[in-house]
Length: 122
Image (spheres, rainbow, N blue to C red):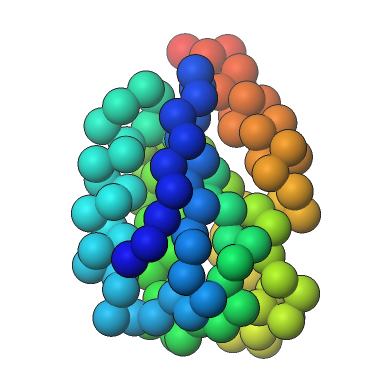
């Protein structure tokens, strides 16, 4: 799986550089996420701008990772979804389970706001 990882102070940005994100990639994807979460705060932004198609197992994997992140007090935000992919996720009733933003900049803001919320809850 071809990805680019950019490490920031409070989060990592993982840019998927594949046009199709399929279920047979989920194990490798999970390994990438787990390794990335070991550093900094564990917060992750997934830039999906290059992804034009996804299958149901991959989408379900993203939803499961979203839930696990919040259980671990970490943020997971998807950004830059192609309109057709966003529409497909909505029809699969998975979009509502994901934390998504139109731009990477907005995803940064969400992660930083969630960090502040977690600090205030302590």
